[in-house]
Amino acid sequence: MPQDDDARRQHFLKEIEQLVQVTNREILNQRIPPITRENILPLVVSVARLRGNYLAEAFRVADGGEAPALTEIQALKTHRETYEEAKTAFEALIHAIERGYVDLDG
Image (cartoon, rainbow, N blue to C red; front, top):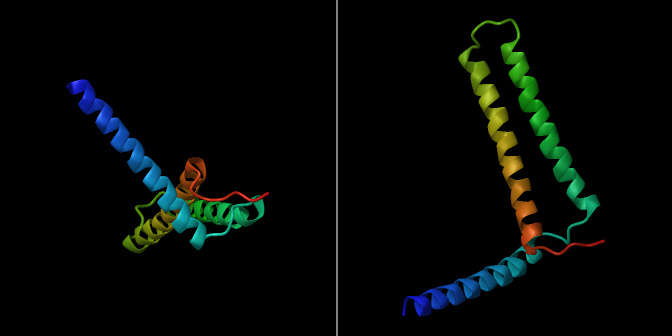
């Protein structure tokens, strides 16, 4: 009996996986265009710029060796959060590509 339960669970999980695949493809392909090198480039550049802004701010805050002011720390935090949010969005896109949730063009 435990083997039957395991097979039933595996079958159920496979059905859920297919449901997730179909649902993501349907929704994502309505919301974003087919992915090309050309239309992904602005997102790549944006994440790189935000990473650069964050790191530049870290160096600026550290310049002089003094303990940074609270306003400087807040600015650094804002840069980090902005960068991390963009990076997370890019990672979500990569995940969608890897899973076949979005169409590729070209």
